[in-house]
Length: 214
Figure (cartoon, rainbow, N blue to C red):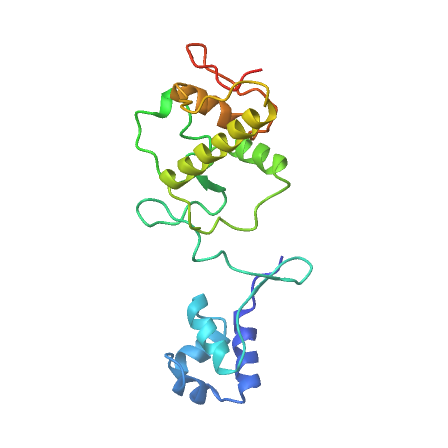
């Protein structure tokens, strides 16, 4: 691919705006000699300064792909890490409780609201399973906090349990039903397929409750 023709771009800006080098210098932060050096190929110009020059002529800088279609920048409102920094652009973000923090080997670490898949082969497998490469990093949404997501998962489990009880009306209903499953049972249920009415819930080996099992 050919190098970007900066000199030609600046000359195009001047021609479109019908401005001399001195006139363009008068409406920009550059001197006439700087503009002359740029057009002569003797000096560079950063993208922000070039964008300001283009705006003088009613033009704007864009990225285009091989087909000539415009490619938007990554969204500045996308999720960030706990320090307020953007996540690596080439990797994919996800919720902090989505896989990475699951399991006892992670429970000694402080969970985060958002994280990213660090290993590219894992990232690529997830992309294949989810239908391709996400266009951007996710945008923060209401209900994204770890506490809210945990509450939503518990509510989903309770809905499945209620549907399971309703499916078996012949069995006596216990008004004071109290689930005594350890946290590991909920981890197993949520770590596998989404809860489905009629499918027995998985239980940890040391579970003494075994509720909702056929």
